[in-house]
Image (cartoon, rainbow, N blue to C red; front, side, top):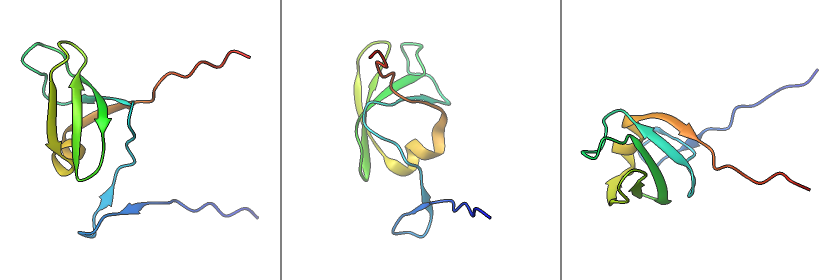
Length: 82
């Protein structure tokens, strides 16, 4: 019998943190004023640095606000050619 365990990252406040990494593209609920909803993660930690995929504008935003407003996470494309 194989038992599977779900690994959850607990943050200091007792909540559960999402596992987000640099280079991933996230889609947020509200669009940027340029009209694009996709952002690239440039930095992670207590704050995130995000770059708008439409106009290139960069923002710093608290982790809690990012995790609350995420709609979709796209993993970075990797070249799988051998």
